[in-house]
Length: 355
Image 1 (cartoon, one colour):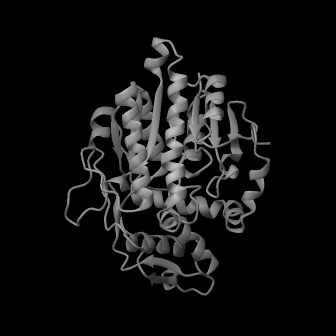
Image 2: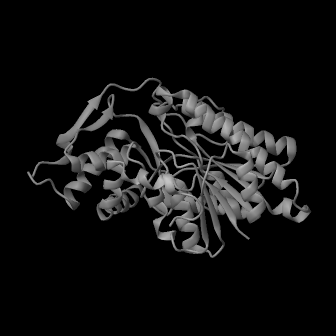
Image 3: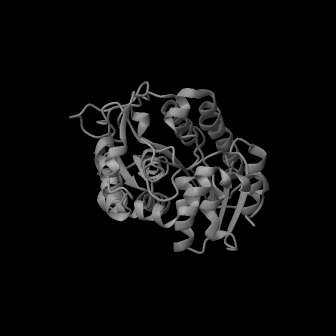
């Protein structure tokens, strides 16, 4: 048996692949287009691991996906592949429509064709796990209860709208064709290997570079933060015991404002790597104009996942953020390669397993 992971060279996908093979000998085939956010360095511990195969390619390439499915006969596909950065979606919404909507459609078609060839036992055992976001639900008022799986979709950015559309396609393929799908709607992830366009790694990188630490508007936008290893654990639980067709919200029960997050990061950096001039990193904080359509608050009720599958996050925000900062301190070469763009040099030669 094996599993196929799409988008597995990105932030959450690579953490999932590494965690999977740390816990299991079941082989993994990783498919990733290696756009700017895909980084083969994320999978470097697996370069000589016979349990792992890497293929560079697009989920929108039905022929390639079908070839991989036929060749490896996976029992599950976990789909992390997506364009995810809200700012980029505002600047170039077409790329998000193409990757997240059209790409998901082609992926579903390839999987449906493969699944239809399986015997009854194989069809019943197969799972298509679609990894989505809480941003499809829109924005919460300050005193509103957290999102549940019954919350109506009201996406407010091209990114969240494209993910909402992909969620609807996944659901439709279950309802129409019987494809055994599972969908996760997760809150803001953080942890090792996150591309530094996102808040936490951006602050860490800019702090060391002596650059401003930008905060949108008043910084009181509130998010529920989920350590990436906890998210990976939730996906494994869904794959093991989730009900086909079900959606599970995955949250960390860790609501923090952006201002609180940046303040905690600055305090940790002051402790772990103080500035040479003795000033606090908080002196680098600057407030910048808010972005268009910026959702004020997200909060996720993950009670269904806890109740039905027994999942709870292992990390508090304080423990997870300390692990995250320490990882970036311990992996200066990874940070330098991403900051310089050197990690992109591997993209052109990526085919088959990484060398």
